[in-house]
Image (cartoon, rainbow, N blue to C red):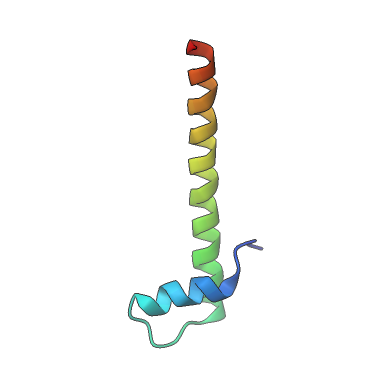
Length: 55
């Protein structure tokens, strides 16, 4: 279960040209975006750790 609200996800999909958006599509995109956000956060954390070590 994603923590990202479904309404903004539906808006993103519709702004990309879709006329209708299924619940499955909203859930899939929300899960994907959450996974990408986790990866970015991990990389940022690693970067900050090495920055602190080098300082």
